[in-house]
Each structure stands twice: as C-alpha cells, then as structure tokens.
Length: 365
Image (cartoon, rainbow, N blue to C red; front, side, top):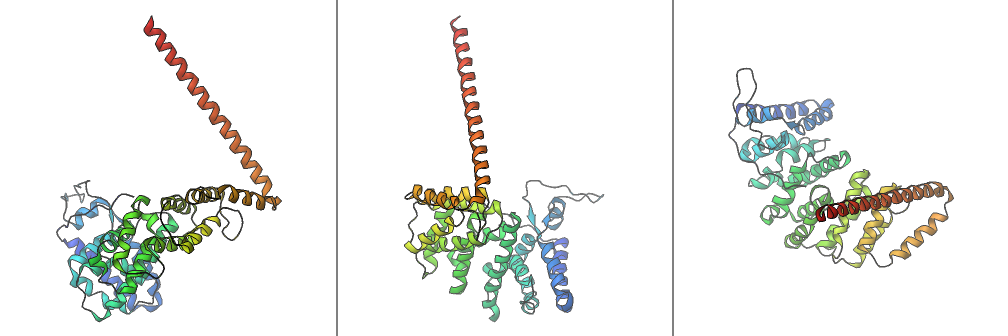
C-alpha cells in the first residue's frame, strides 16, 4: 500500500460551508427523531464514505474555474478523496465548528453508527486541537470503538476506502509520541492493539519493523515485548477474518515474522493459529488455498519439524475417507498441470536453442 498522499490546505468555500451545515443538520435531525435515529445515522455514515468526484473537489476548495454551463475545469493532479477526509481536515482547521457538534454526539453515544461517524469526522481534530473539555476521556474511547468498526467494514468488503483514517492513526499518532501521549494510558494501549490488528491489511508487511520499533517508547505492556504484542493481536485477528482474499493476504504477510524473537507462549499461540488452518473441517473450515497458504507460512516460520507435521496431517486425513476423492482429484490435477508446465519449459528451451544455433550459423556464413 502506497503511503497516503499529503494534501495541501485549500481556501474555504461556500460549498464546503454548506457541506458542514448539512452534516450538523442531519445530526440534529437524528437527535430529534429517536424512532428513526439509527437509520438517519446510517445514511449519514454512508454519505461520509462516498468518494468526492473531481468537479466536487474543485467546488469545495475553489480549485479550478466553473464555466457557465456548470462544468468545472479540473486539475487532475489532485488525488481522490472521500467526504469524511474533507470534513476531518476542515474540523482540524476550524476547531470551533467541530466543538459545536460534540453535544450532539454526547447524547447519542449508545446509538449505532454514532462512534463511527465521530471517528470519521474528528480523527484529526482529536489529536491536533488542544483539548480542555471534561468529556475528553470519552472521546478517545469513542474514536477507537468507531475506528474498529470502520476497519472491519473495509475487511469484510476487501476494500481500503478508509485507508486515510488508518494511515493517520498509524503514521501521525502511533509513530508520533507527541500525539499519542495526549491519550490516557489505557487508550494508548488500545490504539496500538488496533493498529496491530489491521496492520497487514493497510500497510506493507516490510514496514512491520518500523512499527515495532516505536511500541516500547509509548508504554509498557504486561504481555511481553513489542513483537509479542503484535503477534498476540495478529493471532486473534486471524481467527476472526472470514473473507478468503483477506485471510490469504494476512497469512502470506505473516512470513515477515521469520527471525523475529518471540516469547515461548506467544510463539506457541502463533503456531497453533496457523496450524488450525491446515486441515479441512471445523472449527475454521478453511478452503484449499487457505490451507496451502497456512502450510507455507508455518513451514517458513517453523522449519524444524516440517516433515513430521506433514506426516501427522496426512495420517489424520487417512482417517477421514470422505476427504479422499477430493484430495485424489486435486492431486491428479496438480500433477497434470506440473507435467504440462514442464513440457512447456522444455519446448521453450528447445525453441530458443534452435534459434540461437541458426543465428550462429548465419553469422559464420
């Protein structure tokens, strides 16, 4: 995943002011209509997650010229973004307008989607604006609750629509001790756990060492070192993911843990989690690609005892005859594919050999 692009601060516009007023109007309407509150908040959350098209960006930021027919002359160099990013940036620039919404959220904390909307609108305001309110202790908790639900939406849909929110929490808060120290100790730990659970989904696996380097500077954890904290959250996350492409991605990224020093109990927990995906049936019911990816990762991280593990797995498979037909069929197909690939490589090699020989003969003549 590429690093989030840094956006310039653009002048305010009437369209942006109208957007801010519309958000406040919808929140007030949800508060005034208890019977429809859940649906109204759900609609607002959906609207905030929508992508801003190029014309809307030009209108919101006074960027480009709008001609008489209503079309805008757009600078295509600006990156795409969603409405929640526009509003989060605005509330960080204009904190007083953000504070006017807080009483509305305080009265709807227990309502579905309220913490998600709060996280989308105030993820920059929460850390960049000095806080003096007595209710500040509640805000980090709401942010973490909302961000957790939001990231799961991305995982379930296998999209990264809320990458900006995650990257800000990782790059600008977790790595920046000045921002992180604004949170209570418990909230700091919960945020680091949150970043750990979704790290492989949003960030390149090779950046893990950078992330682990910053964990000890924030607070001490009773569960062990930085790597132990990360792996404990990772193993819990693996058990919860039900989307095959995402789980495959997590299993493959886990190979980056090779050579990382772990506590014995943490290492055993990771090994058990991976091993649970290597056999068909309950409790995980993994598909064949998941099983193969789990075996590859397990063999990569724990090469000692590799053959013994496969032998035990084969022995248990033999005790379940109803798996034999599918296993035999897949074995035959894989062998046929391997033979065809081998023939292809041989034919390609012969063709290149004949071609080189002919070129040699032509040069000699």
